[in-house]
Length: 285
Image (cartoon, rainbow, N blue to C red; front, top):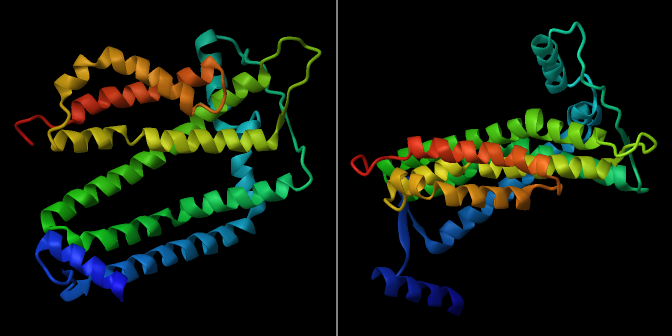
C-alpha cells in the first residue's frame, strides 16, 4: 500500500492530480488498472505464441520443407537465375554450376533443439498480427482520433515493411549468400559441408536484420514529421551514410565475407534513397 501511495504522490506531483485516472472506453482507469491491462495483454501474447508454436511443431515436414528449400537446386531463385543466364547468354542450357552442398548435424540433441527453435520463431511470426493488435489496442485509448489514425498507418506500414524485408532475405539475400559461400572452393579435393545449425542461424539472422533495416523509411518519415530530419539534410550527408551503411552491413551480416555484406548494404542504401523522397517537406509538417 505504501508503494502504491508513493506512485500516486509522484503522479500527483507531475499532473496535479491526487490519483491517476484516464478515461478509456468510457471508464475511468487508474495507474494500476493500466498495469493490470498491460499484464493481461502480455499474458495473451505469450499464450498465443506458445499455442501457435506447439501447432507448428507438429508440422515438421512442411515447415522444414520451406526452411531447407534454399539448399536445393530446384529453389525458385536458382531456377530464375538459371533461366536468365540462358536468356542472356543465348545458350540452350544454363552455364551455372549445380550446387553441391551437404548439410550435416554435429550434435546429439541439435536437431531437436533446432526444431524447437524454428517452431518458436515461426510461431511468433504467425502470431505477430495478434500481438500487433493487442499492442495497438492497449496504446490507442491514450491517443486522440488524429493520433490514432497516424499510429494505425505507422504500425501497418512498419508491419508490411518488416515482412518485405524477411521475404527479400528468404528469396534473394540468403539464397545468393548460401550458393556463393556454399559452392566456393579453393581446391576440388575439399568437400563443402555446412552444419544445419550454421544454416538456420544465418537464415534467421539475415531475416531479422532485414526486417529491422526495412523500417528505415518509416523512421525517417516519423523524424521528418517531427521536424528533426529533412530531405536536404539526408542529401547533404549522403557520403557519410554510405560509409555508415557499409559498417552497419558488416555488423549485422552473420558471415565475414564481402559478398554478403554488399548484398545487405544494397537494399539499405536503396531504402535510404527512398526515404529522401517520402520524407515530408517542411511545408506539409
